[in-house]
Image (cartoon, rainbow, N blue to C red):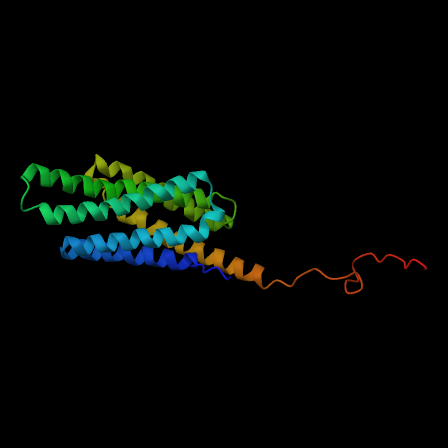
Length: 206
């Protein structure tokens, strides 16, 4: 039975599409329920990506992937809870929910995404230049943790997150091209008669 596999680049593309949709919703002050749906789309895309790319990862990247995915999913849930209960809760409670949602889907997620990108970039598979770009994106994303205590560092969140997502999509496409090249590589097997490069044993007289 053929096993259905999802190309990792498809997960990375869904991840990026959900992220850009979240930025659009935030910029236009759209409904929070829509933002929650887009955050879940991001989480689903990240899961699909790592399902196809986990062979290139390690325990470190798996832990970073788990935190990045769960933080997005929990952000979506908190977004929906805030939208549904904001009219019935006191202002301090609503403010606390909003702050937790922002930090969870912002700094926590982007830092974990940076750790995931850095782990994949240093796995030895990417080319040197591409590896350096991945490390740079990871450093920028991890530096966004400063935004929790310093508002001027807030632009690091979308910048670091976007760079990591673009790197992830290109990395996923690279994995796919390598998999296709391996799949279509001719089989070196065969009998010695078919392989002149293999030693032939003399016939044993009966």
